[in-house]
Image (cartoon, rainbow, N blue to C red; front, top):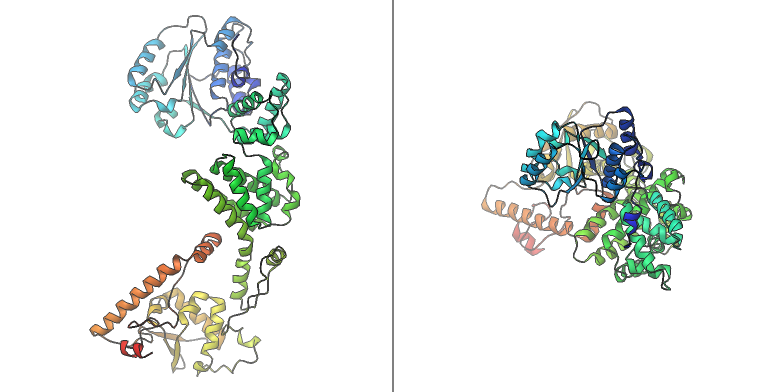
Length: 572
């Protein structure tokens, strides 16, 4: 007898043999028991999870000589003929090679014939999404009202390509990816039954590499068995198969958590030399950090089906990181997985990703720093940055910026506040607003105030900010801050639309405006292309509110506020 590969030899022959699809087999068995079998079923899901196998088992259950039964006997001639693919009343069709309208017409003609040996004729169409639109449309009427002796079973890996009109005529079952630990248990049963001596760490690596496909796992196991006659170490065996082993993944996690950049480069090179797919490596690393995140959120308690995963072995490393860090790692790896899949040089994507993730802890305290600065406080190294400093990262101390003082009643050195002469305390007011609302504080920078009367003030700002301050919401917020700071309850505010810029209706003024706008646009492009700015925006999910020159004069151009003429600029 010719050799039979493991995937065929261990193909399930009863509903009880099906691995990881209990939600499907239970419903089908109940339908058989109650006599509620549908005329059309649609099985969808990833490759190698049992769609075609369940379709054949259903055909045996319907045509078994012992009667319609939830579990076929696999002993009668009908069951054995269906198992070997020789039963005339079970027709398997490849949708990829029989996708045209002529093939569907031939199918429609054969449907009218009565069963030869069985009770019903079963038509199994694999990869049904490959049928053309015309073929689908030709099949619709027959699919909706087939003869009573006919059952259709469609299987597809791309359910989104199946027409809605077909979906509405079928009972749909979604086959799931099989859990890694379930695949590993199945591989162990095969090894025990076949007397294969395969190390447990290799079995777990095969189960993870299969990515939920039992057929892929059985094929990988067969490749491992092919090397059993040779003296090959476990690591070398995984290298031959191009599989990401747990040791390499664990080394990558440790290098990331310890910010060991040279080690990250070595691991990326190792992955490349072993021929491991860069996208697959990032995806496996993503799985680990996902499980670490679950560990952290569940306070080191994993669900039962994850107890044997690699994350359960990293308990000591969990204490070094918090949820915010893990979320950043997770997002960066999610992007890297897709980038490596599309890149012509995935090795560099892997290397850059490991280095970037290993550098993330230095930035993890930035949100706390920003919140502290908004409160007008000095910041001296948060706890997470202290931990990083112990690993060699420079110690950071951030002082409160000059001019951003506390609220006056907490700073006795501030001058007395006079509501009738606010110019004396205006700079202190602007510094305080900067700690409460940085956008509003930036808009008030370089501003002046003038009292028109007891109930009316005039605010003069840079022209670039007049439109912002004329917004009703911003004006209301500004008046609220003025009331808090100066103690004035009833006040109206006039905003000078010209700011500090001189009025000029001549060509020179228009040229200055154009030059100012051009230089500012160039400055914005330069800032947005800066690598540091890009990293901050990406890691923190931030956005740029405004970019403006700060007291900088370019020859023959007015950069700061347009208050000087070109001649005055040249003199400076």
